[in-house]
Image (cartoon, rainbow, N blue to C red; front, side, top):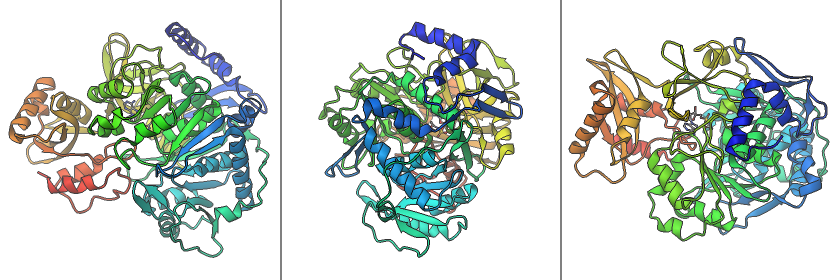
Length: 630
Ligand code: 7RM
């Protein structure tokens, strides 16, 4: 099916997708290689919930990411790899080479006893082998569970045990700027508590010293020697598991989101091509880590199934200096650049000379994901990186949705800063109010739900379908609840306002933290805010705001007063923060999510037991926050 090329196309396609979803998705899916076509496009019941796409279809996703491209693009670069250290040689891996690398890893996995349906944990840094490993699992019908290599051994234990992984793929160590992390040592510690793991394959990367455990640990480079570079693809059912990916939940136990092969393939491919308007030969770069859904869908499966050239970056934005992203963009002539608001905000604070020394004229499209982008950052990105000529696609989606849900389409959707804009074809957003009634007006606001299935959605939480139902399908029966709040303006543009599960009850009034945050952010001195509740003798809960300013405030008391008055004006006096702490950073995960758990503890006066902070982008901000607690 043709990708939309104009706004009229979009309106037409969207209407078709609503009027006749099955015909629409069958058309999209028809462009792939199926060993056997599906018997039925969709089976669903959101009350159970049960969702199946392309029922009875048989395929292998790697035949769609690799084999199918070889006649036309064997010698085209599939993956450009940029190492952590800019003085190390980058790698260009063609589709032909990628095919052989994946087959070799697939044969290695088989030789190590991995069979169809087995769960394989991938705990690796951003090196090409991580993509080979994911695709190799898919090739032989094993289920991958990629765990972000910044996670601690505690997090690794929970994830390995929940999925019952049989094998772990890792490296000796990983680079992060000028630091080396001994990944293998973290794995060793974890595996003391992981009885299901029979084997560990270790790819050499940093040359760090490792202790090899007999009968369990094997060097990847030895195990792969002599492996044939061709491996038949396992025939899979469309609804077989492709991967499990863990996402944090409101309880401590992470949720293993389950994605299945057929629908996920169709959806990531379709959304990648539609939103970025990817053109033949372009270089596309998504800066996420493969440990997150963004890396799965938009570094690996979406781009590779589309025959694109995808750049994979091992390093960090701030090393050797704050110009690294722009250096890489120039060096590899990047055309499409996709990153997170949190990265933009940190780079925005560096002197502009870090941007200006690089030639960014190849950039055609910019994107963001992970959290609402504030207008300030949007304009900086648009003006200084896109030079005013690149559209910014503000893509709203979730681990659970598998792919983009609400997003502008590059060059086609008229942009509004900080708005994710319109639903993509096939996506049916429904706003619900506090009384669980549908909000049909525009403007209107409330909780964001999705009223109809789309192919990329997660099918369950691994091993806990009950929790899947309770978390996503019980608040608004018959609808998928995203957990996000949103506003729709008079023109029908959607603006995602943030998570609604963070609610503070002040003197009996329900207040959304996101709402207070955006009110504080309206002060011209404020760059970013995080609000949490803390126990308050009189009000039940008090409001504690952590505020980052563009420049260190000179007169803190005066600024506090102005912020309180501003919030009173925007929301009402009830929402005035009781405490305002000025900070230079917030505890964020690498994907830009604020770890409110930590902020809540500090606000409660508990600074000793903060739990696991290893997933933070910069754990040192926690020290500053603790030291300045009010
Ligand atoms: C892709 C990803 C999902 C949550 C989601 C939102 C927030 C993501 C945007 C956004 C506003 C955006 N998956 N979020 N993208 N909020 N605008 N463009 O991030 O599972 O890790 O997080 O992230 O709250 O529910 S995720």
